[in-house]
Image (tube, rainbow, N blue to C red; front, side, top):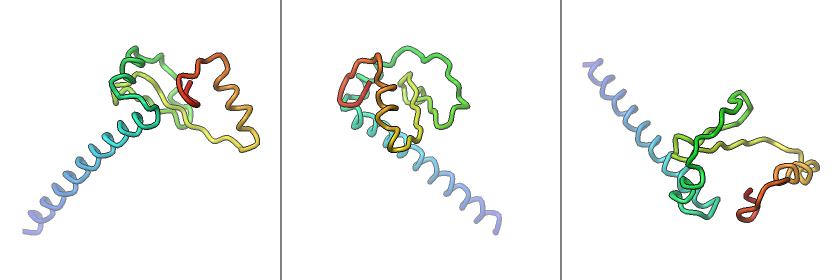
Length: 102
C-alpha cells in the first residue's frame, strides 16, 4: 500500500512538472513577442537559418532553436559606468530594427 501511494505521488509530481514546463515555454514565446513587438511567426521568418556554432561555454548564452527561432541570446552584466561604451559596441555596424533592438 505504501509503495502504491508513493507511485501515485511520483506520478502526480511528474505531471505537475510537465504542466509547468509547458507554461514556461508558452510564457517565453509570449515574452519574445512582447519584447520585440513582432509576432512569433515573423521572428521565425527573420531567424529561419540555423545559427553558426557559438561557444556554448560562454556564460549565459542560450540557443533559442528549441523555440523555433534560429538565434541565440547572450546575457551579461555590465557596470553602470561602462554601459554607454558597451551599448555602443553592441550597436556598432548594425541596423536598428526597433528601439534598442539590433
